Amino acid sequence: MAERGYGDAAIRAALERDGLGAELVDEALAGLEAEHLRARALVERQGGGPRTLRRLAARGFDADVLEDLAEFAEGA
Image (cartoon, rainbow, N blue to C red; front, top):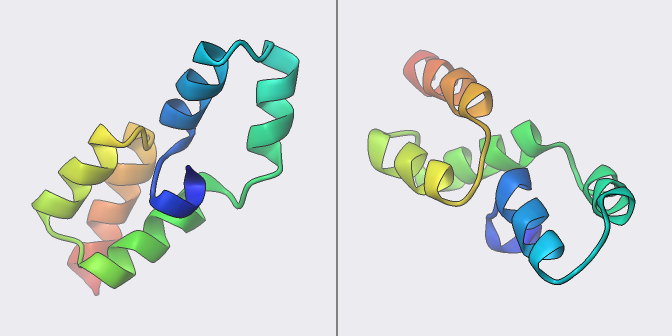
């Protein structure tokens, strides 16, 4: 899911829905590239406009990550 552009919240929800326990979910998320780095790469590829940020929010990226990305996109 991370490779398909999903954030930690969406990945966590999917894994929990599949019956994985909290410890396994935490381990799985810890093994991923940091969420802010994944989100920034998506913004760099897709542009940092409001539409991209809304898409990332819908895909489970943290609001703080998106706020930082909005500031990054404005400065770019």
